[in-house]
Image 1: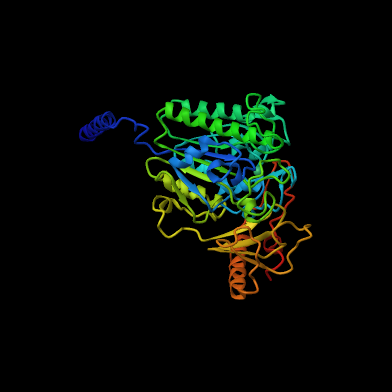
Image 2: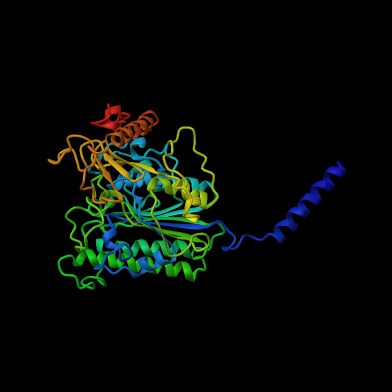
Length: 470
Ligand SMILES: [Ca+2]
């Protein structure tokens, strides 16, 4: 007994000595913080570093010179709600029961992303991170709000800035009838508040901006500032967004946290049709709601001074679904998916980003338009539209047979080479069917409100793979 007591006392003494010798890790030693920012409906042609000559985005251009600029990054879907589901779940939205549209438009409002989904925020929270969000949610109300999906603190609007006027903090209504002109400012203030907090644990901040989603209502300090006439409001809104991002980066610097923070900026889908923006020639055909490249191929900039070389470009395929496993790898987090959770489609690509010459982790991707089944697949440089053409089911220009494009030579998808490459068509169709069969076999039902009937049964096979796959 006396011996055991001595051992106990010695152990306690050693424990205290050890903790005195190993104070809490400084920001330099700790796991990296994350700031994951995502604009709403912002396209490549809106940023100077992606070729805009009309909109001035010096802070994002500077971020690109300090970090890595992606040229083949794909948002999770060409419309808001499923794009966000993909980002936070690491899975194709069809795997989570999504069928079409955005919450409040085509997507039944009493449904959303199931709480069975193990989100990126939950993984970071479970790994000891402080998780925060500031911005637009749009993937479920009631039991599917951010505070139920892994965020320790959440300051948000529930749907798009044209759909609702209430602001929430951690589930409590804190403002009715907010001013659309001030949203970017108020979400910025919240991000800076979290950055300044004195915490032992690292942070993961998700910032889904409402800008530049329509209506474009410039902040009073920016209204008319760009000097653009017809497209002026849109330009003013994007230029304010750039300036706010500069303020966030300054706050990081002032807090001494810039070196050890992974900063990401991206968009949830391409340009809104009809949104009056400057007329720089876009890199790609198509826009929001379409599976042409312009629907989902959007900017992504990643800065992490400690591990990622500055001023380079990464041209291999990376998708929104990859960010969950990739950021987990970057932060040394093992993702422990609960048994009832989703199957991940994302592929960790952190090694590739540190060694740009390495074999890419991903070389294929499925595409959806915003209104229904899967429509296309990319494998390497080839893209096959196999369902409803590139647009939507009501479009008069429906393709009558699968259409094949070689993206390096034809990024605007103008020259269908299916007849010249029938073997490629067969190969990509077969691969699409394989991937879609797996999605059909391993899907979660869509989430529903507590009192709501589960209105959407799991998808049937034709819902998932559509017209050209038998
Ligand atoms: Ca959007």
